[in-house]
Image (cartoon, rainbow, N blue to C red; front, side, top):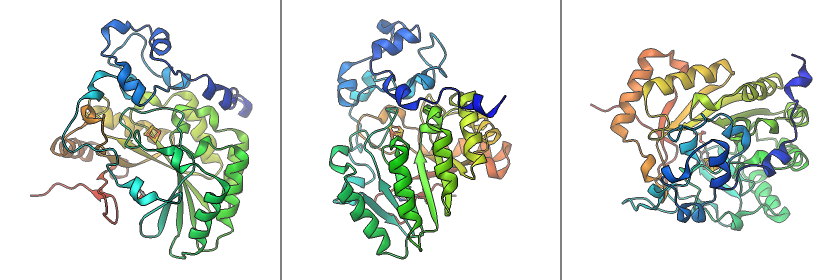
Length: 336
Ligand SMILES: *Cc1c(COP(=O)(O)O)cnc(C)c1O
Ligand code: SF4
């Protein structure tokens, strides 16, 4: 294969615009009988369906239980009220006001750069987040950069979202330049699901922008199941690696998506073949509408033990939970 071939369909904006926005279109595409699915308009009214075709292409035709489909389909279970589930489970809305900066942990800040994502994951803890209030205006960006400049304990800036790779190349390049000009910032981290769900976003231009950064660029992608790792995703990751980007993965432990040891084992193995190190396996954040995805901590620990016994240590992700007000993600260990 020539290098050009890897970038053969690089019109990511068009692919984004053509993503599925309706349950009907997605079900037709996958040859699924809607009458046999527990669909409800109430769920998609709350949080619309959004699925890029490249992600839908990783699903199995005609399979209503497909683990990727389950991540994106608005279903009746979302309307169930579970105790302890809130609209802002990790305290982000409170922490973010009024700027675009979330400074919860020592030495690193998270910068919100856009309200949207290329895909709407039903289990998302930000599904109820009023992103419109956090839009990136030039003033807000300046305010955020001033904050980072004025605090020399900040060694790492995490571009998050929404999905920061939805920014245009020009905006992203401008942001990286501004961050690179701040002496005490040592690393720039990008949290993005785009290399997985819209690999066409990893264009030669983007790779050049990332490679040009004098400070190390780390990318934490988000993949929950080995089936998400198509050949196009592999090509995108290999381009990122070739442009000196360090790749990690975070996954969310989700009932009937990846809550068994074999699935998680395969995920780690496949990630590594793509040059991605498993980083975090998150227990679900308790956002309203997501309770049917919850996996208990006890069961999660059993899964971790199986992974620990069958994988090299560096392919076992850390099981973590986010706790409002805590100084770091809480690593879940077995006690007793
Ligand atoms: C998760 C998170 C980070 C990054 O934490 P790491 O443990 O370094 O991956 C930073 N800031 C906020 C607000 C976070 O939620
Ligand atoms: S890509 Fe991430 S932030 Fe966006 S909807 Fe999915 S889980 Fe939420």
